[in-house]
Image (spheres, helix red, strand yellow):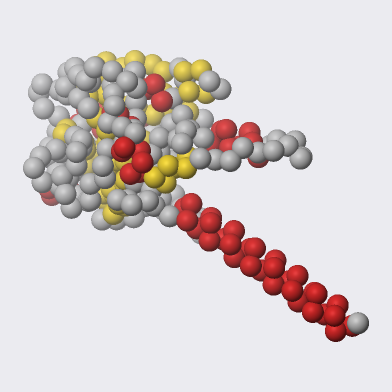
Length: 268
């Protein structure tokens, strides 16, 4: 009788272990980038909210997890980047050593004495169906000191470039309503806005078929970077080191956004 109880206990423990392993495998698959995913960096850095608080599933997921005990929580539907491409919601990924299929911008080799320290390229992966997929280049200016053993920090300045079909002014909302923003003077024909977030303002520039996002520790540095914006697009891959970057802004400024870019009506 005693040996039977032991056998039952062992079988029960095995079932629990197998169940936990299965859950871990499923979770790992959900976090694994899909086919065609590419994330290559000349220098890695802890960047601030790389996807940029776009209209996403994050708030919705928080609301679901805060549901009353016993309430059924809807499953989160995931899409790979390849599926996004087929739905015309994303561009095909381009590796870091090849030209991008959208215009890339930087602020030159340095901004207000803050030098370029790194470059990252992110594209692909698997994301919730209601969250825009990541696809951007990121020029990182200055370094950061974690100070006190913190796990990460934010560099003084980052300049991201996204395809307009994957990031636009229309993607920002809060509780179902468009987020307020301020219009800044245009750069040539490019439209410029400043959006307030809890941790500070963010400047976005809509030009051609690209969206430029400026993250900065202070507004003065962001405005200086805005003045220096210049396209890095060409027949080669985006420049990744200071010596290869073009200089300041052209006299003509930047081109106006294509039709539907700020309204989120451009298909990839």
